[in-house]
Amino acid sequence: MSLVGSQVARYRISPKCPNVSMVHAEACIELAAAYGLILDEWQANAIRVWFRMTAEGRWAASTWGLSVARQNGKNGALEAVELYLLVVLGYKILHTSHLLTSARKAFKRLMQFFGRKVGDTNAKYPELNAMVVEIRKTNGQEAIELSNGGLIELGARTGGAGRGSSFDFLIVDEAQEYEEDEQEALEPTTSASPSGDPVTIYMGTPPKVVGDRGEPFIRVRSAAVTGRSKRTAWVEHSPQGELDKMTDIELQAFVRDRRNWAEGNPALGIRLAESTVEGEQERWSARSFARERLNMFPSPAETLELAFSEKALKALAVSAAEVDPEGQVAAFGLDMNPEKTKVSICAAVPGEASTHLELAANSPFSEEGISALVVWLWDRCKRRVPMVMDAYSPARDLLEAPLKKRGLTVRILDANEFVQACAQLHQAVRREKSITWFAEQEHFFESMKSTVKEPIKNRPGSFKWNRTDLEVDLMPTMAATCALFGSVKFGRRKRSGDSSRKRTGAIAG
Image (cartoon, rainbow, N blue to C red; front, side):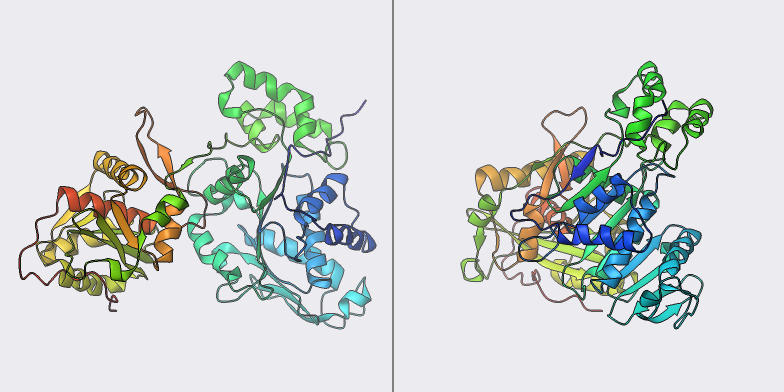
């Protein structure tokens, strides 16, 4: 008896919401069938997980994901989705791939529905071709635009696809190759979604190496399967098991078990021959086979503990009228994002009973603005107020030397000091209630409430900061951590008549 792939995914995760509607899911499956795209059961089930709408008429999930081993037909499910979003809903879609050749293949598959040009007399489906306003075939900038407003642009991420435009859907195909800088550049294209209900779709297989390439995909998947994300619809076909926890002998037995072949490959016996998988299992290493054919990911990170509760933070919020206007800054903390396009600066102002933490700046930044930032900090610090940074902050590479050259006192926290600083801020909020912050600084609150404690290996009870999900801006928390620690360890007593230590004001340049 031939082996047939399981049509039931290992993970079928979607947000829980009352009165969910499946109308669009079934309509999408029917539309695809009407145009000759008959979906496998597993493909249709993936659409049913994704296409769930709330009673208010919004997508239940803002992130959709599908992971299945190669040659199983995940692109067929995506074609059905794109067809429906374009023809019925009139959405604007940006379809990105790691390789230009992959984007072009996707474009050619869509042209089978819409024809090759406006008024194509040879179009297979004249009614779809009649909707076409433009078909753009420029290499790397392929697009199909419809009369109902529907639009799909397809291109390689390395080619700058979609920059400067707004879309309802961002599709990240070959997500195992998706990099941090690409994510920073592409995902804002849906921030001003024309529909007001944007979705990002991740599709791919486990990355060969867990690192910068593929890390966003790993994070999305981990957040979904551990339950950290409440807004992700995730479908994954893979066998039960934790690859990282198997011995070599256990792994060898795992990859030889043909039941695992069926669990990881829903198209087995349909479009993927069992003999093909047999050959791969003989030729590949056990780990390569587990990753490439069984679709096995690294074990997801465990759910991390929130560092600060919203209740505790709100209890420490104050108005401007409650802060001493004569209070002097004891230290500034500074952090920068990895792309070095944004900077956060926090001022620590000690008082009799507590230290006030004020977000002095949370602004866009470019390397052309280094001089202006140095001047801004000099005006507020002179030689007396320490400027404190974590040793691993991206800000250090750009700012340590010019700040020291200008004459500022720069303090760099090593790994041990930063762990101490995290513990100090945690203690100040949770136990001592010894800090305050401006209630109107919502960005500071959002950062702090979404900060989690990441345990330090081999140091029980010690931790550093991480964030709950990809959308969180951790920089204000990092800057506050450095500022509070700096005010205690490096801060000096204020001198009478010292008016140099201004807290706020726009950064010039």
